Amino acid sequence: MPGSDDREQHAAQARQLAESLGKQGVRVIQMEMPDINGAVRGKITGMSKGLGPTGTGVSTLIMSFRGGEEITLSPWSSFENGFPKFSAIPDLDTVVQLPWRPETAAVLCDYVMDDW
Image (cartoon, rainbow, N blue to C red; front, side, top):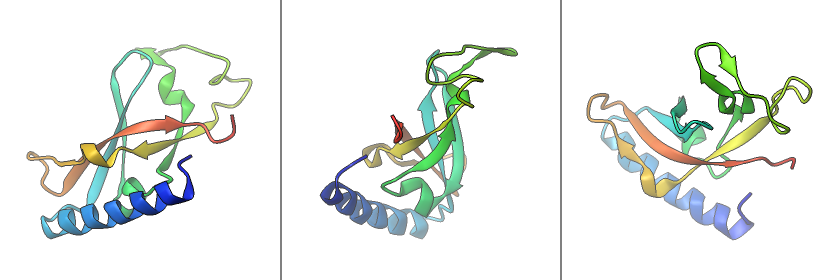
């Protein structure tokens, strides 16, 4: 996780972005992240959670999908460990308003597993 100063800087930048996007009618943010095959997976959440310095929790199960009904198990994502959650931390430099959905913004995210 980012350090205290990084979180404060992130929070200030997130507040500015949320205010600016809110004035443009954005209500939610689509958090986007790649799976093990390079396909984009995501989660739509409120602006404050989606832009926050701690991100949002996501199950490692999304990293296991191979297509169809197949999943790939790994030491960090399996039935044995219950597919633990990790945090999707937004990269605020990638935030964009979606032109085809003006009430939605999108952001690319980094993964952080806090308990490893």
